[in-house]
Image 1: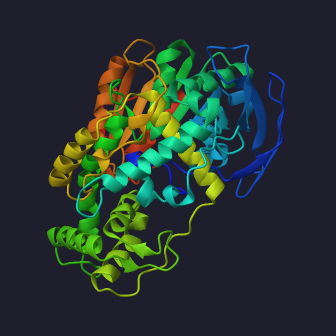
Image 2 (image 1 turned 135 degrees about the horizontal axis):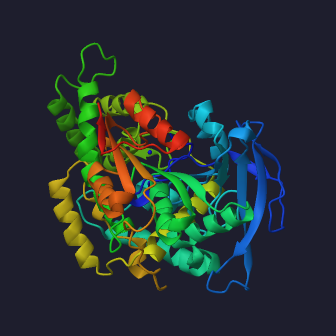
Amino acid sequence: MRRTVRLAAVLGLAGMAVSGVTACQLASSAAPTWYPCQGNGLDPRQECATLSVPLDYDKPDGERISIAVSRIRSAHPEHRRGVLFLVPGGPGSGGLGLPSTWGARLPESVRDEYDLIGFDPRGLGASVEANCHVPKEDLVLERLRPWPDADGGIAGNVEVENRVAAACIRNGGALVRSIGTRTEARDIDRIRESLGENKIAAWGQSYGTYVVSVYATMFADRTDRVLLDSNDDPDPDLIERGWAANYAVAMEDRFPDFARWASSDGNPDRVAETPDAVREEFLTVAARLDRAPLPWPGAELSALSGNGLRQTMLDGLHSDKQFPFLAQLLNAAAGSGTLPAAPPAAPEQTVQRSTAVLIATLCNDVAWPTSVGDYTAAVAADRARFPLTAGMPRGYSPCATWPYPVAPRTLVNSSGPSNVLLVQNLRDPASPYSGALNLRRAFGDRARMVAVDAGGHGAYPSPVACANEAVERFLRDGTRPETDLTCR
């Protein structure tokens, strides 16, 4: 689920690419001291610095930690409006390289308006490192996500998630207890302050839409233009719990796109003759693999189970470009043939950091149910209603045993400037349109929405020209559609 590491949607949540930056020069003063970044595939103009922020904002004079920041300055300072923060998804994805990667998607007319600002959220990348020291075998997505057992039970899920939670409680320390969305919003504001800016524009994607929405709620008068892409439901009583549950809806929204493609005439990876037959084939093969997994050399678990196929589906529906691999795997498994090469595993250190930040955010942001029985019933009902995801979106959470208090509720609302634009695919496989509508309602007259008749996670840039024009016009001169718009 456009990622260099498929971590960002662990436990049913969605995310973006982990930063390609490996290191940057450091500075410790209040105002950044900039140095050339080091890393692969970066724009040579990108600079890096490190800022010092409080570990605990309730103790501003206490322990400090480091946050890595990056920028690409406007090539035409005479046209510069301010700074545009690029806020990554996850939770658990870095953003230090985003001025180079996301910046390349923007037309020059927009890049001239802003210094592009990236950062690695606390716990990730070149920022202070979070690590729960989770057992390596539990870091595999097929286990870390709460996939039910082959028979639909959750005993294995409970065992893994309790082990993961215990590792974070035992090893995460004060840093893991500090991580959460409201804290990230405060870190962003400290970066703003260090840059000497009164206001910031921001572009958040996936989980980044919630981060930016919280920032725009806590610090409304410090926001300029706010662009939110692939939007999360801001329900303050559910947040991440709701996003996890929404995965079942999102997959049902998106799978028909794959089924049409996989049943099209002339497709060398054709699965079946009709979209309905593609769906039936997927469900049949997944059930067969539940009973008898196939050897899969090179895969992290060395075998393809039903949940392994479902996990590949969740990843593969993020972009049409991933359809062929999903179809090839499905066809090979259906015929018990040679499976295609498994995707390479991410470095363990990267996965440990991402997992620590993910678990901390899930558990510190909102309270989760604690009863195993409640999860068992929810999984059974979800499994029957949404067979593609087999009950995983309602599975047992590591947060069920989390002993720390959760952050105060954040009620995203219409108080503040009318400076928000949402852009959203109608068939997003991770952040469904129905949830995005709830964020649109929460912002009220502060916001407009551009809905795009397309599938995939990440609506900008889009294959639909009118969506790109609306986004770029907004970033360039602040103009939004007079009313909500659907681009087809």
